[in-house]
Amino acid sequence: MQSKPLPKWLDRLGDWNPQLLRELKGRMNDRSFLVTIGLSLIGQLIFLMFWFNQISNYPMPCSATNCPTNWESWFRAVFQNLNWLMPYIIYLPGIYYLTTDLMGEERRGTLNFLRLSPRSSQNILLGKLLGVPVALYFAVLLLLPLHVIVGIKAQAPIVFFLSYYAILIGSTIFLFTLSLLIGLSGRSSQDNKNTGGVIYILGLLFAVAMGFIPLVQNLGVYTFWNFAPQFIIDNRYGNGFQNSMTWFWMILSQHPILSHSLFLGNLAIMTTLFWQMTQRAFQNPNANFLVKRQSYFLIPYFTILMIGFVCRVPFNDESIQELSGEILVIGGLFSLSVMTPIIMALSTSRQTTLDWINSRSDHAWNDRIWGDRSPGTTAIAINILMMIGILTVPVLFNTKPNLITPQNFALVLLIQGSLCMIYSLLFQGMLLVKSPKRKTWANLLLFGAIGLPLLLSIIFGFGTSKPTFLLKAILLMSPLTAPFTLGSWDGLPPPILLMDACIVLGFQAAIIGFLYLRLRSQLRKLERS
Image (cartoon, rainbow, N blue to C red; front, side):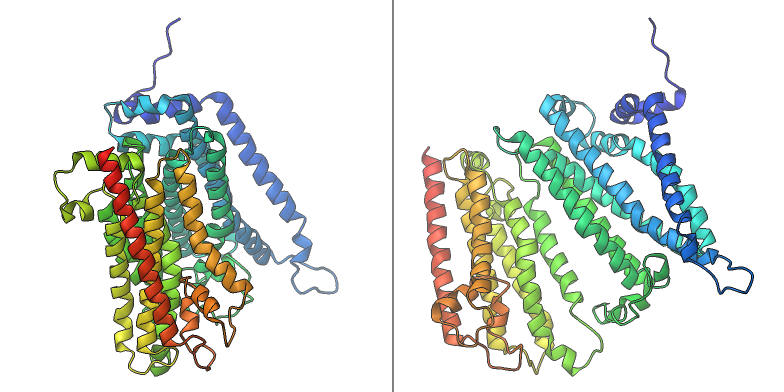
């Protein structure tokens, strides 16, 4: 039986992106579209029925004969809930579709056939991005008329619609690109593929549902949606926090163009980074997804971005005097939230390190700094120095610090930097051991080194005015607790003396020296093998 010829527009689409055509042919059938239309319309009907039952809760002032409904207030409540629901409707199913599709292709072995395709990785991944959630895209299009009509009835200005859709589209592209990366990297050890993939998917879905969506919604109320917060939440919180969120002494709620540019610009930068990492993961699954050149951009970028949020108004002596202590807290958070993933991304596997040893012509430092197959410890050290240097710059203008002295400030920064270096050497060294479970052990060792001192500090006396030397050492072995041990946060003298902190720093330097020598010994053994 001769197959039915494709429509001309679909044929031209296949010439541009065969992968997109493949996805559409597999998903665009009458049954799937009828199910999508049915689910979308039934969901909208249930939503409206629920809110029609709430009409009595939105009365206008009653007269003796009747009690009219405050329709504008009712439509505004419906619009608020639609604005909160739409991200969940779009993000969570889309993330699930993309991650499970790529993991399924990997499990069946068909992903390797795609890698052999003459088409570029960008073309193939774009086909996945556009084609896999096509039913979801169609369901959202069916929801848009309801959203627009309810918004108009709620007296939402057109500027709000443009802002909301820009944030929604930008966040969707960002999360779906991240989903492609997770789908390609969500492979665990050979005996644990399915479990590892499920953990990756559930972890991402939980982080988006409980973290990203509420963060964006609340951040929008305080910044880029400050001109119309009543369309996101009930405006019951006043304007105190809205007027306190600043970036380099500029109040974001008073600069809507700046707040939109800051959010969408950061989304664009991170989406571009994840897209490059996704292409790299697709082309070579065994390579590091993040390259060293990218890390040298990311560290200054994130450091400057985070410093901006502690530069608060008013711009006076008091706010500047508090800057040094707050920057150290930023340094602690930065060490864990940014440096830890970069350490994991730049550290090379045993096989990659063997390939580097066998192919290198000399021991040139240029290869250690820029080469993507060499161990990542040198690049991590450079990133740590950049982090310390950038965090120091704003404090140079602080002539009268009241939270921490310049000596203690420098000491805490050195402690935070040395801890990051210890984490890097531990993780890289464990990845080179001859064990089938080395990646699992490396992860456990890294998170143990980060979490154990913090846990012991909380249990055995964080905030104690006269800690023992052992407790002092424990407090200084966490980037988060170190700033609070050498600063006068409550107006009292620091609980740890400068000499004690210097001793702990010397101990950390000895650990770094030992781990570095051990790593060199491992590299020599690999060279002889």
